[in-house]
Length: 292
Image 1 (cartoon, rainbow, N blue to C red):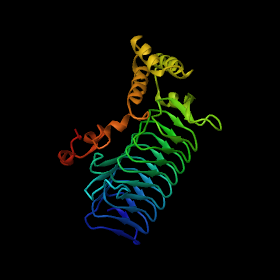
Image 2 (image 1 turned 180 degrees about the vertical axis):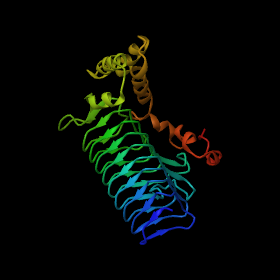
Image 3 (image 1 turned 45 degrees about the vertical axis):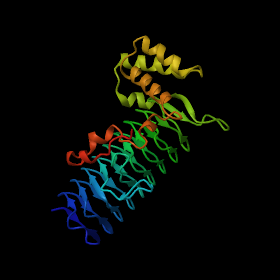
Image 4 (image 1 turned 90 degrees about the horizontal axis):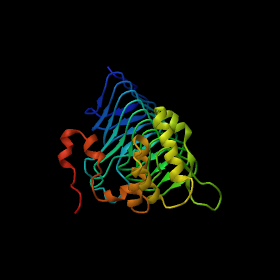
C-alpha cells in the first residue's frame, strides 16, 4: 500500500502508486497519477490532469496542475506531465497546458527547481536543468537539457534556452539563449547578452575531445565580436562543422529567422513539435492542427 498520512485529501479515483508518500494537508485531485517513491511532503496541491513519475520530491507548498493564467485556455482536459527524479523546492508552481498551445506542460527527468519557481502553461523543461530560486518562465518556453538559470531570472514567452547554457541572476531573457553560452547583464546600462562560454555546461555535456575543440572554436567565432552573426554562421556551416558545433550554428540560425530573436514564435497558435512526442497516444488525435 502507499504510505498516506491521515491529514490529507486524496480523491478516490486518483492513482497513487505503492511506495509513494503523501504528507499532511496535501490535496490530490481525481485525475492525478503519482508514481512510486515520489514524495509530497506537506501542504501540496496536485490537481488537473497531472501525471507525476517516480522518485520525485516536492517540498512544502507546491501547487501543480492548476489552470493556466491565460485567456486562451477554455477549460479543456489539458495536461501537466512530470518525469522522474526531479526535486521541487518550496512553493514551486506549474500549470497545465492550453488547447492551442499543444495541450501540455512537461517537465522531464533529473531537474532541480529551487524555491518559488514558476512554470507557466505549455512550457517544456527537458532533463538535468537547474532553475534557481524565484525563476519565472512565461508560457510556451523550452528549457533544453542541462540549462542553468540563476536566481530571480525571468524568461519571455516563446524563448528557448539552449543546451547547457547558463543565464545569470536577475537576468531578463527576451530572446533565445544559444547552447553552451553564459548569458547575463555584463554591466549597468547594457542589455543582457552572451558574455562567454559556460564552462560547467561543456564539462557536464561529456563531449569527446574533438567535439569540444570544434565547439569552442565555433563559440569564439560566433560571439567574440559583434559582426554579422548570419554571415559567420553561413561561413562555419560551409566549412563543414559537425556535431554540437553544427547544432549551435543551426540554433542561432533559427533564432535569427524567428520574431525578435525567438524561434518558437512561429508556433504561436499552433501545436509545437514536442507535444505529439510526449502526449499519451490516446490524447494525440485531440491536438489542434496548426492554423493556416
